[in-house]
Length: 513
Ligand code: UN1
Image (cartoon, rainbow, N blue to C red; front, side, top):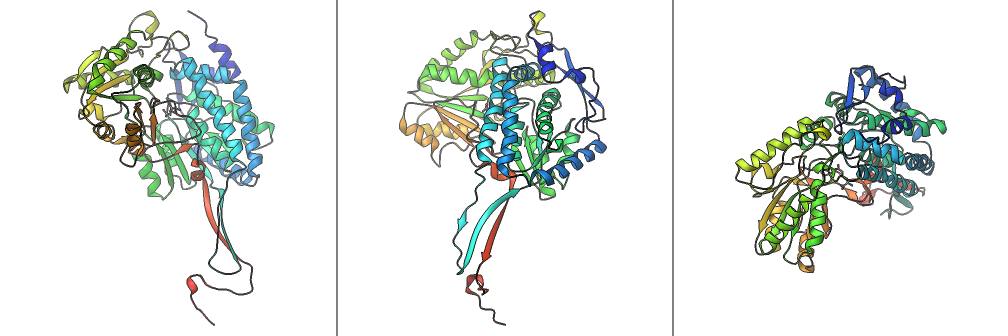
């Protein structure tokens, strides 16, 4: 076996003790049952993490609430300085952390590094933002009055993240929330708990070096029951959750039940429309990376290709040819394009989806299947598949977190393609491959794509951190990362100040005593 340097990486991330299943005694480590983290790469045990019991959770919340009281008083640019230092540490640890992401989650090492790069980028963004948490000034209708609005820190923010981006999605949320003055409590996926511990170790070090309480960043571990402690907790004004639509509906209802705020980033069913004059080479690269990258486990993965009938065969042949070149195997080996799925449950869902697609009348163009043999011991390696299907198939309407690409056909106008692309319950990412200005603009218009992300001549995945990230409909409506997504992590206050000796009332109301 090739040595990919995992031991050294784990050591650099401070995961040695965890490896032996012991607790470091730090506030974020629980006393509950133990989760063992097995790598989907080779099936071996990477480490064990203790989960957070309800009693541990109380301690974490005490730490977070008292840290918040201190943190919110630090000027925002000074909070930015802490985030800058965190970003610096991430630069130093990019390789080991990227490797751990790859090993614990199964995405390619390049994508693991890319994920850490997203963390670094959002830190830089947050540092700049720390001097730009602007409100507006307005003109009061009353003489001698000044009116403006300001943004204040919100409180303790809960973050629930998914296995597929085990570190970046946390960073999108927490880096912004930190400069906004919030303390954060993070529940990573129970499928990637070591990524959570590694990140906590890094920020804990930065906070310690700056004599700040570790409660500014807390980690809780476990399954949905641990998440529920947060969604039902009035001390958590905002819960940001990434995951399935099913999970999102449960979180949203629990949080709304106590009139808290939730930021939801749920499933996608992303399509690329291919018009008659599309650049076929670009289409193939965009579609293949979108469909098989991260083994189809991004919420922005390309699941559907909606191809004009005039170029259908040409695109179909080019894509099926490209699939023959794909190398599936250990994601730490940079020669491979496609790594494993997260676990054998995911493999079952993948197989089930292929079966359903065939049952509904789909035609398999590129055969799927589970790989067997020496290098595929974990049982999580599957072949990326392509199925000719109809948008109306139940299985096409669903998000299957696996490398299955459905080819759909449209005829006539681009409106017909847009109708298919919008004809699902999800609304995250979308794209059009075209050289027609008219088709591109129609796709982007008010009657075009109904998704939170709409790209022209780019695939559906690989969004940059500078834009707001999220989607409409059952994707949940939340926006994270760039643009003005920071506003959700703060409370807004409108202030009117009277600097006269009279008290005129608004709307010209007379009230003489
Ligand atoms: C996710 O899959 O939850 O657009 C996030 C992308 C990434 C983020 C995906 N930047 O592919």
